[in-house]
Length: 271
Image 1 (tube, helix red, strand yellow):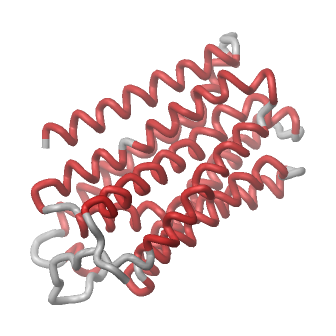
Image 2 (image 1 turned 90 degrees about the vertical axis):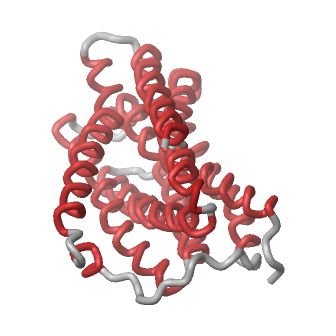
C-alpha cells in the first residue's frame, strides 16, 4: 500500500485514542448499569463480584494473547479482530437473558478489550517520534478515563428514561463504527519503526539486570489497576446503597474519571 502521510499517522493516533475511549466506556458501563441490570436479571448482590471480576479475567487473558498475536500477525490485524470482539460483546451484554449468558459475554468482551491494549500501545510506540513517544502513549491512554466519564454521563442521562440496555448499545456501537477505518488503515504502509536485532520475548523482561525494574513495574500496575477497577465497578453501586440517587451516583463516577483523565494528560505534558 501507499506510504502513510502525516494526516494518516494523525488518523491512526486518533483512532487509537477513540478505541481507548471505547474501552474505558465498556469497563465503566457494567458498573454504572449494575444497579438496574442486576435486579432486571434477578442477580443477587452476592453474585456481583463474579459479574465484575469475569471481565477482568478476560482482560488479563486477552492482553497476553493479544501481545503474542500482534508480534506474529501484525498489530493492526490483531487490533481489528479485538475491536470486533469487544464491540460485538458489549452489544451482546444488552441482550443477555441470564446470569450465565452475561458472564459469558463479559468474559468475551474482556478478551477483546485486553487484546486491544497492547496493540494500541505498540502502535503508538512504533510510529510516534522518539521525543514524543511517552506523551503520545499517555494522551492515548487518557481515552480510558474519558471513556469512563462518557459512560457515567450517558448513564446519568439515559438510565432512568431508556433503561440500562441503552448504555451497552451505545458502548458497542462506538468501537464497531471505527472498525471500517481500521480495516482501511491495514492497507496503508506506515513508516517502519526502528529495526530490532532480536525478537522480543518474555525472557527479555528479566535479562541484563531488568528483573527488579520489571517486578517493580508489575507491582505498581497491579496496585493501581486494582484500585481503579474497584472504583469503576463498585462506586455507583456503593453510592446508591448509601442512599444517593442513581443520577448523583453516576455524577460521582463522572468526576472520578475526569480527574483521572486530567492526571494522565498532565503527566504526558510534563514528561
